[in-house]
Length: 187
Image (cartoon, rainbow, N blue to C red):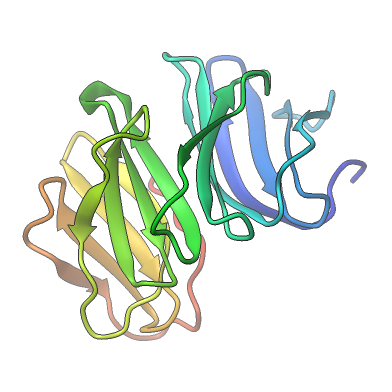
């Protein structure tokens, strides 16, 4: 499709019926209508290898990780006002998820095997799920109703889950997977 080279992250805005994606082939953040029409390039400069993308529709922001720049950034949903949120201590940021109700963003740093949590403005960065046994967390999903965080780990070939307070870490799928990357929960 026009405008699509190497899509990686994906996020949906079901209110405006838009699909957003990071494209590491063109180093852009793009969006289109959910039927594929009206493709727009929203962020076209400053990206080196964008990966995960998440939306805070109520707050009017999109968030993404960039493996090349080792940053977490955000912008308005139209791509304006790009801001650096987290620029230090990230090795290989991949997936991320936002919880606007609790003013938090969760970031999978595959390079260190950690999942971090920070405030939506990029402050108060802290370890959420620490390094244990050489993991490689790739993508994150939140189940806000049940209060769980899920992540795929493409080094251990597992799908993992923890409580939203970081406790009760457990394997959900521990065999039969080969390099899981994406992850989605039914709503």
